[in-house]
Image (tube, rainbow, N blue to C red; front, side, top):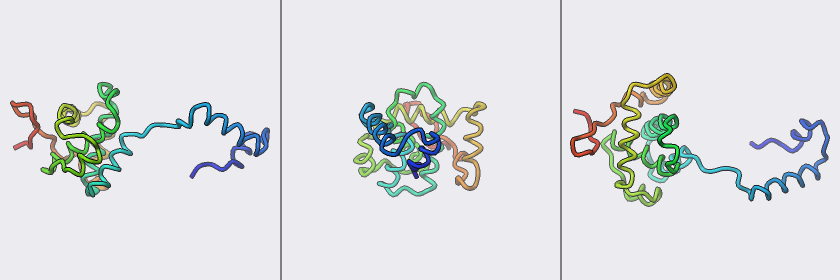
Length: 166
């Protein structure tokens, strides 16, 4: 819930009255062209999972993959929508599931467009975690999160494709 105007007026020690406050707020919003933020990868992931009716366990696995990517500076310029789609695709592959026409439609990404990115994300979850990523791995190893951090990552085959470990 957004804070009430009365709360802001109180914090300002009643230096402004309600009409002044609202007028200033409108000026600020117009100055920034109502651009308050951008959609985050987590929001895209939730939408994709809802559209494809993905299970909570699968969504949690994709969240784990996505969360490990947040500390990877090489992915800073990747679109959040693409990062979310790749995290979901990798999670699906780890559970022997396929990228569906529904996911292709709602994400607007073909599986082939996500291949390089899922290889990168798979490497992120394959390496022993550094200090920052240990917390993420511990969090997602818990029963509440379906122990998804314990699911083995995929192996990179000789032809450069990801496949289940034998």
